[in-house]
Image (cartoon, rainbow, N blue to C red; front, side):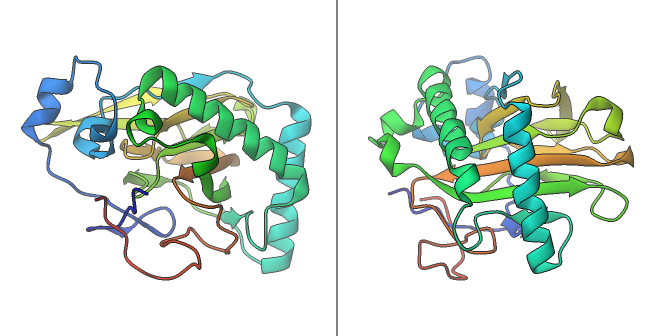
Length: 245
């Protein structure tokens, strides 16, 4: 197993995310190369990888099931903003959705990154570390700072809101080079799926108005978590700090 661990960081959107890492010279040499395998766990290299868009991947029915599960979780736990839908075990209605998204991420990895092949991992080795519903609005958070999802393999985002529902809140990735940062806005529409390496720097621009809802899953080389949090260790869930080995 990769046994990812957090080396340094600060609170990000939720839980802990690494928020700073110096850019290595190796990344410059990789910027135009097709790099595959475990080196992509290095954020200096992962930042050059592609964020893959799968248009209209989820149906209206799928998105309605996700919203219903989020509402149920919100009612039970009396929280707004981030809902950890895997809490107490993933709802049956979401199992097939998460499985489809996992299979899609594995297919994208085979085409673009080769992480599973390099680590000799099978489909059964990949579990959902966290399954989240994010709300951006005037009563919740309005932005998500630049970070990467330390310790996971792939992150999958699905936009549940339409363009008429909000302004701002663009999905961004960041390229760090020579002390400067260049941000890219990624096309992202209702029902679309964005899949990317978890160690790729990404953020959400400030929401100007409306409500933006997103379904987010991080996949890792471990069993699925059932805690009401973003898991920071191997089950049983604990508070151990995490580092990439």
